Image (cartoon, rainbow, N blue to C red; front, side, top):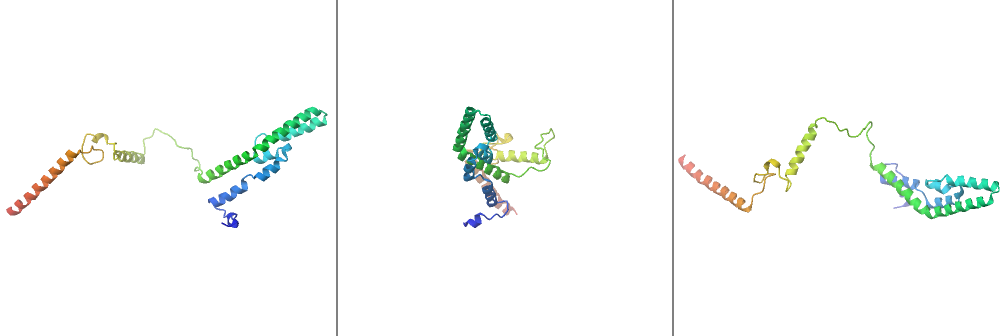
Length: 200
Protein backbone atom coordinates (compact mmCIF):
# COMPACT_ATOMS: atom_id res chain seq x y z
CA UNK A 1 0.00 0.00 0.00
CA UNK A 2 1.37 3.46 -0.83
CA UNK A 3 2.51 5.58 2.09
CA UNK A 4 0.02 8.29 1.12
CA UNK A 5 -2.90 5.94 1.83
CA UNK A 6 -1.44 4.99 5.21
CA UNK A 7 -1.37 8.66 6.24
CA UNK A 8 -4.85 9.45 4.93
CA UNK A 9 -7.16 9.89 7.91
CA UNK A 10 -10.81 9.42 6.97
CA UNK A 11 -11.90 10.56 10.46
CA UNK A 12 -14.12 7.54 10.93
CA UNK A 13 -14.50 4.92 13.64
CA UNK A 14 -12.56 2.21 11.83
CA UNK A 15 -9.24 0.58 12.55
CA UNK A 16 -7.41 2.69 9.96
CA UNK A 17 -8.28 5.97 11.70
CA UNK A 18 -7.48 4.43 15.07
CA UNK A 19 -4.03 3.38 13.89
CA UNK A 20 -3.29 6.87 12.57
CA UNK A 21 -4.30 8.46 15.86
CA UNK A 22 -2.22 5.96 17.79
CA UNK A 23 0.84 6.73 15.68
CA UNK A 24 0.47 10.39 16.58
CA UNK A 25 0.04 9.69 20.30
CA UNK A 26 2.72 7.03 20.72
CA UNK A 27 6.06 7.96 22.21
CA UNK A 28 9.06 7.95 19.87
CA UNK A 29 12.43 6.50 20.80
CA UNK A 30 14.39 9.35 19.21
CA UNK A 31 12.50 11.97 21.19
CA UNK A 32 12.90 10.03 24.42
CA UNK A 33 16.67 9.72 24.04
CA UNK A 34 17.00 13.37 23.08
CA UNK A 35 15.01 14.36 26.14
CA UNK A 36 17.32 12.22 28.24
CA UNK A 37 20.06 14.70 27.42
CA UNK A 38 18.09 17.12 29.58
CA UNK A 39 18.03 14.74 32.55
CA UNK A 40 18.90 17.48 35.09
CA UNK A 41 15.32 18.71 34.69
CA UNK A 42 13.85 15.21 34.23
CA UNK A 43 12.64 15.89 30.70
CA UNK A 44 12.74 12.22 29.67
CA UNK A 45 10.60 11.17 32.63
CA UNK A 46 8.09 13.92 32.01
CA UNK A 47 7.92 12.87 28.35
CA UNK A 48 7.23 9.22 29.21
CA UNK A 49 4.92 9.99 32.12
CA UNK A 50 7.12 8.26 34.68
CA UNK A 51 6.91 8.73 38.41
CA UNK A 52 9.38 10.87 40.36
CA UNK A 53 10.02 13.10 37.37
CA UNK A 54 9.89 16.13 39.64
CA UNK A 55 12.81 14.77 41.70
CA UNK A 56 15.31 15.61 38.93
CA UNK A 57 14.72 19.38 38.81
CA UNK A 58 14.51 19.42 42.60
CA UNK A 59 17.87 17.63 42.89
CA UNK A 60 19.39 19.95 40.29
CA UNK A 61 18.20 22.99 42.24
CA UNK A 62 19.66 21.52 45.42
CA UNK A 63 22.94 20.89 43.59
CA UNK A 64 23.15 24.52 42.50
CA UNK A 65 22.37 25.65 46.04
CA UNK A 66 25.11 23.46 47.52
CA UNK A 67 27.63 24.73 44.99
CA UNK A 68 26.62 28.32 45.73
CA UNK A 69 27.07 27.74 49.47
CA UNK A 70 30.52 26.28 48.92
CA UNK A 71 29.62 22.75 50.04
CA UNK A 72 31.73 21.14 47.38
CA UNK A 73 31.77 17.52 48.56
CA UNK A 74 28.04 17.49 49.19
CA UNK A 75 27.49 18.89 45.71
CA UNK A 76 29.79 16.26 44.19
CA UNK A 77 27.96 13.47 46.01
CA UNK A 78 24.57 14.71 44.89
CA UNK A 79 25.79 15.13 41.31
CA UNK A 80 27.17 11.57 41.31
CA UNK A 81 23.87 10.20 42.58
CA UNK A 82 21.94 12.18 39.99
CA UNK A 83 24.16 10.92 37.16
CA UNK A 84 23.86 7.32 38.36
CA UNK A 85 20.06 7.53 38.36
CA UNK A 86 20.14 9.15 34.92
CA UNK A 87 22.29 6.31 33.55
CA UNK A 88 19.90 3.77 35.02
CA UNK A 89 17.03 5.61 33.34
CA UNK A 90 18.94 5.45 30.05
CA UNK A 91 18.98 1.66 30.25
CA UNK A 92 15.23 1.57 30.91
CA UNK A 93 13.99 4.02 28.29
CA UNK A 94 13.32 1.32 25.69
CA UNK A 95 11.18 -0.70 28.12
CA UNK A 96 9.32 2.40 29.26
CA UNK A 97 8.47 3.35 25.68
CA UNK A 98 7.13 -0.15 24.95
CA UNK A 99 5.05 -0.21 28.14
CA UNK A 100 3.62 3.26 27.51
CA UNK A 101 2.66 2.51 23.90
CA UNK A 102 1.15 -0.85 24.88
CA UNK A 103 -1.09 0.71 27.52
CA UNK A 104 -2.03 3.44 25.06
CA UNK A 105 -3.09 0.89 22.45
CA UNK A 106 -5.10 -1.10 24.98
CA UNK A 107 -6.88 1.98 26.29
CA UNK A 108 -7.81 3.25 22.83
CA UNK A 109 -8.83 -0.15 21.48
CA UNK A 110 -11.05 -1.14 24.41
CA UNK A 111 -12.54 2.34 24.53
CA UNK A 112 -13.45 1.90 20.86
CA UNK A 113 -14.88 -1.60 21.28
CA UNK A 114 -16.86 -1.07 24.48
CA UNK A 115 -19.92 1.17 24.18
CA UNK A 116 -20.71 3.57 26.97
CA UNK A 117 -23.41 2.71 29.48
CA UNK A 118 -26.82 4.35 29.00
CA UNK A 119 -27.59 7.52 30.89
CA UNK A 120 -28.71 7.01 34.51
CA UNK A 121 -27.73 3.33 34.35
CA UNK A 122 -27.40 1.95 37.89
CA UNK A 123 -26.63 -1.66 37.14
CA UNK A 124 -28.69 -4.73 37.84
CA UNK A 125 -31.09 -4.38 40.75
CA UNK A 126 -32.03 -7.60 42.57
CA UNK A 127 -35.53 -7.39 44.02
CA UNK A 128 -37.94 -9.84 45.60
CA UNK A 129 -40.52 -9.27 42.87
CA UNK A 130 -41.82 -12.37 41.03
CA UNK A 131 -40.05 -13.16 37.76
CA UNK A 132 -41.40 -11.59 34.62
CA UNK A 133 -43.23 -13.56 31.96
CA UNK A 134 -40.18 -13.70 29.71
CA UNK A 135 -38.09 -15.11 32.56
CA UNK A 136 -40.64 -17.85 33.17
CA UNK A 137 -40.76 -18.69 29.46
CA UNK A 138 -36.98 -18.73 29.28
CA UNK A 139 -36.78 -21.09 32.25
CA UNK A 140 -39.36 -23.42 30.70
CA UNK A 141 -37.59 -23.36 27.35
CA UNK A 142 -34.23 -24.11 29.00
CA UNK A 143 -35.68 -27.07 30.87
CA UNK A 144 -37.22 -28.42 27.67
CA UNK A 145 -33.95 -28.17 25.77
CA UNK A 146 -32.01 -29.73 28.62
CA UNK A 147 -34.41 -32.69 28.61
CA UNK A 148 -33.68 -33.30 24.93
CA UNK A 149 -29.99 -33.88 25.58
CA UNK A 150 -28.62 -37.36 26.01
CA UNK A 151 -28.32 -38.23 29.66
CA UNK A 152 -30.70 -35.46 30.80
CA UNK A 153 -34.13 -37.13 31.09
CA UNK A 154 -37.15 -35.23 32.31
CA UNK A 155 -37.85 -35.92 35.97
CA UNK A 156 -41.50 -36.94 35.55
CA UNK A 157 -40.83 -39.13 32.47
CA UNK A 158 -37.77 -41.01 33.68
CA UNK A 159 -39.73 -44.24 34.26
CA UNK A 160 -41.36 -44.32 30.81
CA UNK A 161 -39.98 -45.95 27.70
CA UNK A 162 -40.29 -44.60 24.21
CA UNK A 163 -38.81 -42.19 21.72
CA UNK A 164 -40.12 -38.92 23.15
CA UNK A 165 -37.71 -36.47 24.81
CA UNK A 166 -36.87 -37.51 28.34
CA UNK A 167 -38.06 -41.10 27.99
CA UNK A 168 -35.75 -44.05 28.41
CA UNK A 169 -34.82 -45.67 25.12
CA UNK A 170 -36.10 -49.14 24.29
CA UNK A 171 -33.70 -52.05 24.12
CA UNK A 172 -33.20 -53.98 20.86
CA UNK A 173 -35.45 -56.80 22.05
CA UNK A 174 -38.17 -54.33 23.02
CA UNK A 175 -37.87 -52.58 19.67
CA UNK A 176 -38.18 -55.89 17.79
CA UNK A 177 -41.22 -56.80 19.87
CA UNK A 178 -42.77 -53.41 19.13
CA UNK A 179 -42.12 -53.82 15.41
CA UNK A 180 -43.68 -57.28 15.47
CA UNK A 181 -46.77 -55.91 17.20
CA UNK A 182 -47.05 -53.11 14.63
CA UNK A 183 -46.69 -55.61 11.78
CA UNK A 184 -49.29 -57.92 13.31
CA UNK A 185 -51.73 -55.06 13.83
CA UNK A 186 -51.20 -54.02 10.20
CA UNK A 187 -52.01 -57.57 9.04
CA UNK A 188 -55.13 -57.68 11.18
CA UNK A 189 -56.27 -54.35 9.79
CA UNK A 190 -55.64 -55.52 6.22
CA UNK A 191 -57.54 -58.77 6.88
CA UNK A 192 -60.53 -56.92 8.32
CA UNK A 193 -60.91 -54.62 5.32
CA UNK A 194 -61.84 -57.38 2.75
CA UNK A 195 -64.30 -58.87 5.22
CA UNK A 196 -65.99 -55.51 5.67
CA UNK A 197 -66.12 -54.98 1.90
CA UNK A 198 -67.83 -58.38 1.31
CA UNK A 199 -70.49 -57.58 3.87
CA UNK A 200 -71.35 -54.36 2.12
